[in-house]
Length: 79
Image 1 (tube, rainbow, N blue to C red):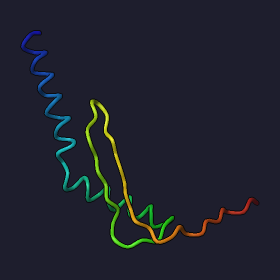
Image 2: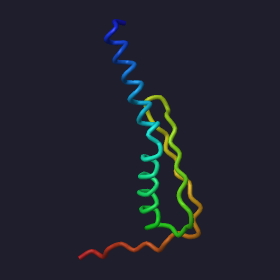
Image 3: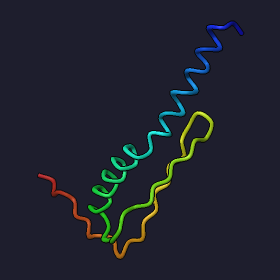
Image 4: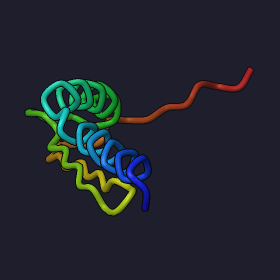
């Protein structure tokens, strides 16, 4: 491996690591979005627990929540 390739690999690892390390702002925005969406379907108090783990080149995302009930669902009638 030449010097340029080594520098590119190092830069790629830093960028990938920074994506996961941008936790505070990322998780705040993600938590707000997920909370907004889930409140359309469930009654619950508190906030959803979100975990993100790096798995090779992918990410495992888990959302857990203790809901009191599932809200009634009605579809828009066909016209």
